[in-house]
Length: 236
Ligand SMILES: N[C@@H](CCC(=O)N[C@@H](CS)C(=O)NCC(=O)O)C(=O)O
Image (cartoon, rainbow, N blue to C red; front, side, top):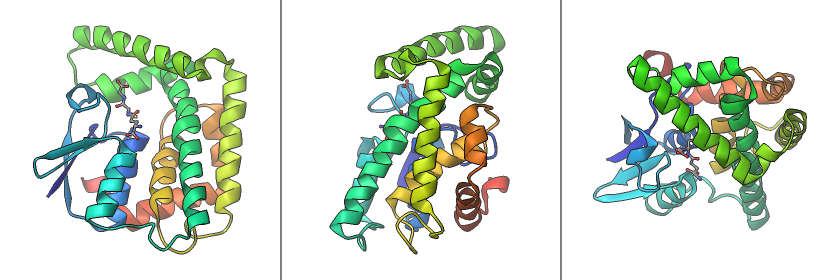
């Protein structure tokens, strides 16, 4: 059976990592048997979560993991034509390579209050004195990543303007469809849900969350996926 390695559940959402949440959602949508193991990025093959083990084979990165699931289990994108497949990939890049950095900024850098909530969620189980040291080390590292990406070179106002634009794109593209590509769930839904639940249903306050909450179709999309695929969440 596939083992999915990801962060501990917290905040009553599937995972505080959009990428972990994306893979778990794909597995649930495709009805593939799996078990979850909680771990930290330092144990992962590429130093980032999620990763999976399938037999004696291990694999990191949500996109490569889903490619593996498509090839060996079930391909949720098989009904998409080549234009839809291209749009799906482009939208995933918007979610994971742009919007992700805005969400990361809001957790690790934007306000001290957000940082404390984020710190407690990720490092809360570590004994207090060590926790502060480890958390400070990781915070410095993540801030460097945000700066290295380029997002961290903008002002907060510019960053949220950009993130809100991404939210507008997602809301417009979803429109009144059931899923992002029509009536059936695809990889894009797993990716979008992973990010949107991490913006809309997290105790991280920012102009990004405030803006996303004004998009009724995105709010309903998140609730729909939770209701259809995560009924066990509150008891897990
Ligand atoms: N491209 C990767 C991104 C994964 C990623 O950024 N994971 C973050 C958590 S959201 C992580 O493990 N970061 C740890 C680190 O950078 O040290 C994917 O799609 O899986």
